[in-house]
Amino acid sequence: MKKIIGYRKLLGVHEKTELAELKIIYRNLMKDWHPDKFNDDHEQKELAEAKSKHIIEAYHFLVGIAPETRALTLAEYTVTTTSVGIVDFEYKNETLQINFIDGNSYEYFGVPKALYVKLVNAPALGRFARRHIYGSFPYRSTSKAAVAAE
Image 1 (cartoon, one colour):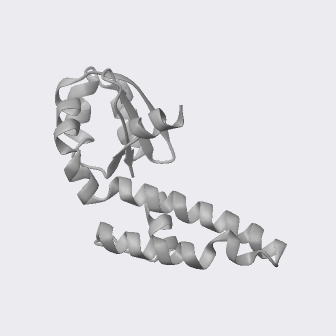
Image 2 (tube, helix red, strand yellow):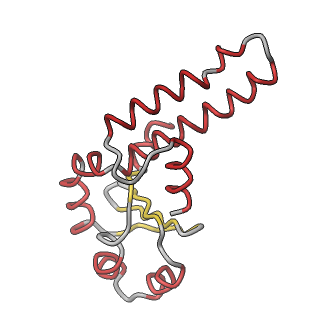
Image 3 (cartoon, helix red, strand yellow):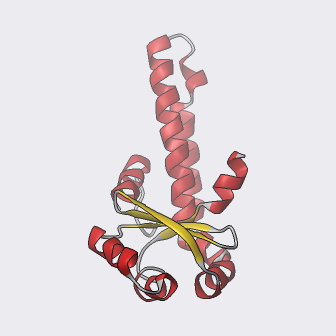
């Protein structure tokens, strides 16, 4: 959740911001912080490069967790989470990544460590995740990002 809050704060948006508005805000920030704008000042250019990379990362992340984005992929998500087994999972800083047999991966944000421990000790991972994780936490797909990175 800290990641989500931090990215929203960076872009100056709130939870209810729609994708169209998010895109406009992102473009305006990129106009302000584009490194080519600071060709005369090397120090400012380096700062702008770092800031613009962070803005791009925040934008793509927030697009990934937006309700509109999740609505577009809801059918695939539902099939994966209801009928496909879990291959493995990883937990770090209240973020739980679950990898499925069909190649899909999802990150869940704000998952308490106690719930993760219960998942590890659950006799049936899929059933536990369906009851306590899938509908309870904001998520985004990470499988497409992994394919694009290859």
